[in-house]
Amino acid sequence: MPRSAQLTGVPPSRRMRRKGDVPPQQTGEGLFRWLYLTPALLMTVVFFVLPLGFILVISPMKWNGIGAMQFAGWANFARLMADPAFIKSLVNTLLWIAVGLFIHIPLSLAVALALYKRPPLWRIFRGAFFVPSIISTTALALLWYFVFNPEFGVLDALLRGVGLTDLGNTAWLANLKTALWSSQVPYVIYIGFPMMIFLTQIASIPEDYFEAARIDGATDWEVDRYVTIPLIKPAILLNSLFVTTSCLRMFEYPAIMTDGGPANSSTNLSLFIYKTMVVSYDYGRSMAASGVAVLLGLVVVGLLFLVGRLTPGGR
Image (cartoon, rainbow, N blue to C red; front, side, top):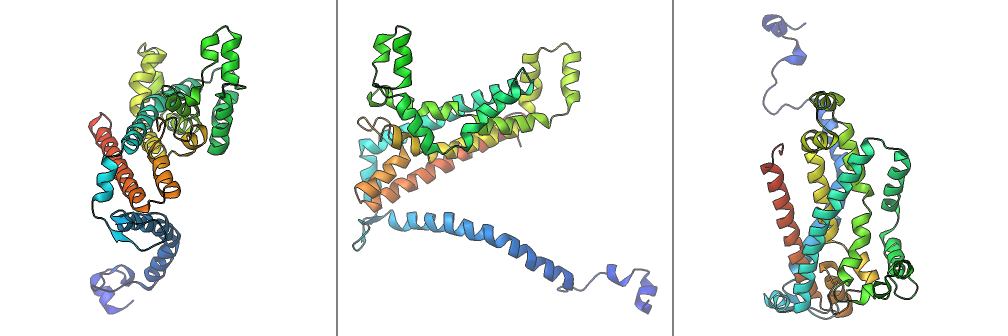
């Protein structure tokens, strides 16, 4: 052992190094860390940073996608605010988010709470609820397009079969009052993904908590309300974020089932952006609408995080 180590009583490997000294092994570890992070960083740049930059560059331009760009300033945003179709798509997108947060998630939570108690055939029900989550959304939209078909659809045939002739002759996807809600039905009832997140979170709660509540005389409803739900608030927030982002980019159901009609009654932001760019060749206004969608997403997600922090048990 060197004399310096004998004087200090500290092994050379544990003595304080001079500022700026980097152990050789840590240099290699840092390189491997960057190699692991590189794919994620590339995907972030390609699929987030570059598209966001494209939106910022094109949104103040007048451009049809082929010719030269002309700077239009805030004109594209002014045209959007004066366009009834855009205002309707914005309202419909907010309605999609509201349906997701206040119907889709509570339904997923209720089913998860019921399945966790393991009723008869609970494994079959769990699989039946989850299977649609692995099927293409396009295929599901086509399926429900035929379900709502007024001529040979299953829904109208069932209604007519039980004597509800007036309802059985309803053009659900072509009616101003029912087109939007009909296109939201498949999204509401396919709850497999959030249900599995809730089941996983509930399974992580120690069984002692439930036993203590039952010993105190709590009913199943009281156990769910005062024990289970407060302890799975992180899962509720996570599912709320997933639902919000899903509703903001929802495209297949309105595009395939109603094409945004009739009279734009079921158009949302994603479909409006698509039609403005691909059908009207108005790239500038389409990117301006995309910017509004990004801003809306940031506001809603920020509100969700704020609510999560303010509620008891939030972080």
